[in-house]
Length: 475
Image (cartoon, rainbow, N blue to C red; front, side):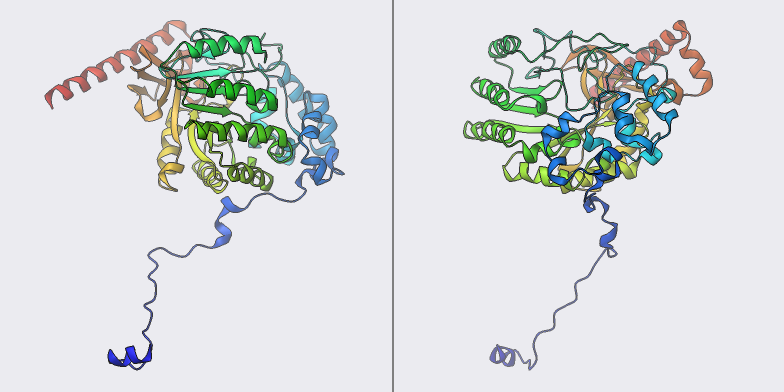
């Protein structure tokens, strides 16, 4: 080396140019997406004060101790909230289309010192004092899933994809469930459509799928595929893989967000899912897991441990989120959620503008909220880890990119979408009435005024389409 330096006319080692940092340095303590809740956090709950880690991570203990009514909630949380809160929950329970079902893990993540405003409480535990009247245009099955069901529990809307509702139960029940018409037990508000996990019903679905060669993509949902037994995962997965037309299978579950320990301690279930994934790979067919995190507080060190196991087995995991008022409708919260999902090797896939669902008008946002948040989220991380914000168009239009409306009247809150590859006609989404100006809120109380606002929005959409068509012809 010295000889080479002398030949170059140098007697000293080459100096290394300093690296130029074009951006200011980052304090590692500000990387909040990597800072996950750890330790025995569940012991803050009176009922779980003496529960050790091994017990808390046992998925059977979690299922056995799930909260299913206000009395059990009172027994678990005890003095952490006042009696007036329990009374509010009890009243909310009777007015809700969904029954209560909350895992001990999820219960432990709620900040009971600020229960009314906690983003997780808002999603799972109803309180009557915060409820708002349903939107006048709301229907129980707003997405018309049953209208597009050739056999019970199978929705065939898109040309090459079908939604297979294998069962009607979940590890927890979300207040905002789009399928409140079927999921869970009957409530004071809703008598449910039965979609029990019976092989006889499944066979009808498999037969239909086998007779439709255009079908290539099946979403196995419900309810929640987390609730399927290991042998049922194997049965459904293999039956679908054996159909020559099927190329992609998605097992949809909220489980990793609300009971991640099942992925750690239910070895039989994990092995069954892994076997279906590996068999699919050998057949050149994709089998993936789709999950549902809505808030960064749902992701803990336990979540990371569980999802690391999924990742080690080569299982692709994607997330579908619902935009909710007071939960994740701020730029900072959604940015943190997206980054935290990426930290756990979960690909943010969709953010849904909240469907028109009975009993949860307090959770819906305006379409404009979605547009603003997506603009701020895009660019904070890699493009393939940036979710697409969509409206699942009421009436069966399917998922439409939020920005793709034909017309959006921000005064009346009426937006109009078209879905030419799915169904003809227009599909309307409605902002929550309480977010509109008082004079417009009064208009929504009148049936004739409501119809006029809808008619005006559709006329404007037609005019916009005609203008676009003329512009295209000129080009």
